[in-house]
Image 1: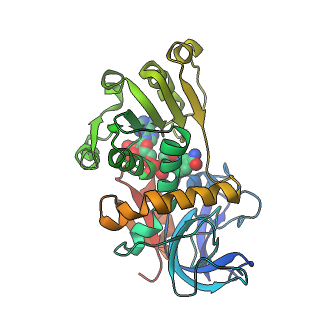
Image 2 (image 1 turned 45 degrees about the vertical axis):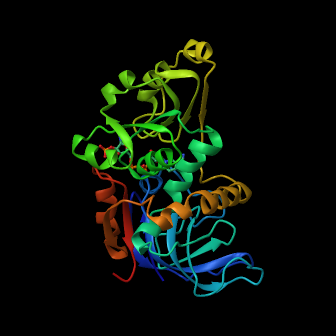
Length: 313
Ligand SMILES: NC(=O)c1ccc[n+]([C@@H]2O[C@H](COP(=O)([O-])OP(=O)(O)OC[C@H]3O[C@@H](n4cnc5c(N)ncnc54)[C@H](OP(=O)(O)O)[C@@H]3O)[C@@H](O)[C@H]2O)c1
């Protein structure tokens, strides 16, 4: 198969042996795979693949058709379309996926949308609802809201009946993010638009002071991204007086059981809205697998939503 292969801070598209599914696994012929910040960090040598994942083939999410199954697989059959997170290896023509984290592709969803869905929607849904228990009527702040996780979090918050404030530094993207159901502000306007019951922090440490200062009593902050920095000082009394919660999480290194539960929650709570068109996966740009270098470059530039690699384009 052809695959994106990481090489000394760069990448190449090369021939690699086809992966072989284990007894609970699906072999998926990938139609599309999304690019994520983790791929760029792995390319830079800062985020090695966890044990069991392909060491040098990046890619955390994909959509495609099942072309072979292990002996114990029960949830999917050959020929069905699935989308899934993986711990690595999605940016290739073929990828092995555990059947418990795979989800059916809703009808009407294009390859590029399905390929860019799983990682960012699972991350956003888990952060908002499983970790922060976001409720109808609560005020939600999403920082870095124009990106993949951000556009997912804004839409999920709006569909769940939260009052969503989206922080977006690029004014050209304000209108598009507002159309997902948010009041859009620039980062310097965040403090004046609270107080917030839930903050999903996608930019990193420089925002934490304002996040904590803008929290409502009983507020919850979840740190998901640290692209702008991971170190800083916090004022613990800001947390104490608000009886607030500060938490953080990553998805990639979690055990299969937790990922499977997160996938079942997406199937029940999110896929129906994706099928009806109430939720969408905005794709800013799509590139053939062979142009992975250009796609990674595009990911680093301002964009609405996802950048995706497509096979057979
Ligand atoms: N914890 C997890 O499990 C998990 C899972 C997925 C993603 N992540 C992380 O979560 C973050 C968001 O992911 P993503 O896929 O949404 O990335 P993305 O598509 O690149 O979006 C990031 C957004 O943050 C904005 N941004 C970046 N630096 C900023 C800064 N200094 N000030 C203001 N805005 C800034 C970007 O704006 P511009 O377009 O203007 O640059 C962009 O809109 C990344 O750090 C990613 O690595 C974590």
